Length: 340
Image (cartoon, rainbow, N blue to C red; front, side, top):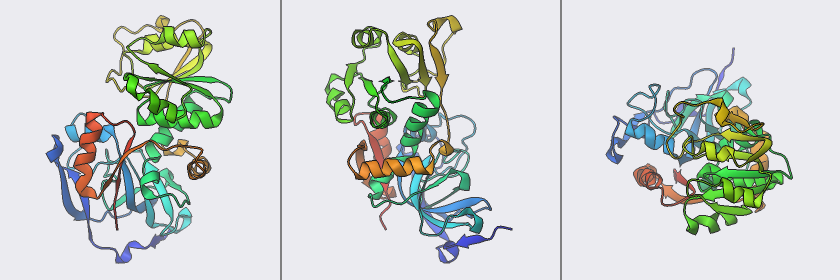
């Protein structure tokens, strides 16, 4: 029988957390003293050091998530920190640096907007780095989604061409840096001409201004079409996106920044001959620890850039962070650091 490895035996009985007590505006985010979560067998308790603030958490706060989300709820679909308690046979030890994301965090069970969070051991990624927490805290969800989309979704190879539609999103910016590191040529879209420079800074070879249709722009650069597309804008532009791809190329549907997840009266014949359409919605296991370690090393070496928009300090600034995410005026990741 697995015995717990507890650094948390002497931990305080309560912790501070941001709790969504009811769907609503920013005032629905309340800082409360709540019990430190009890770790179940097979789970890991993490002392949270930093977490990213995401659009899905804004959706949870507003009450627009699906029925799996109940209230009161501590939001937060990702976090980084150190192990506080784990099963002996989990190979995780107190004080070890770890990341976690997805898998129901902040939705079906309490998430990372807190001093401690408990998660299944299978969705914990151990790592070692000297990078600051505000950098590491930006990575889990966007790296997992970007990496999984490019590998599982698109099987992207060195020398191929990739179009990212929705390029100034956190996943889009992260995907650009990863794709360049893989050796791809990257085209990426923005609706704002003034953000083209930010795309170039992320390594994008060809920034494109998206006015709703981009197929002609892409074909001017790549007459045969691109090899792969990461679709982050959604179903409202999918038909146009499909026209940018070469025969036997692939479109991976990962996000719907424009809010449209379905196509009325969809017919498979809207997909051009020979073009492949797939999707990606994976979990933490799709980002192996060795891959995460290599990305951390690349960041430390300056080969990969982390699109951090703003860093916030303490749970008191979570409302500010969600307000900034909701406004959409600053591209990049918004990260909250819990200072000791």
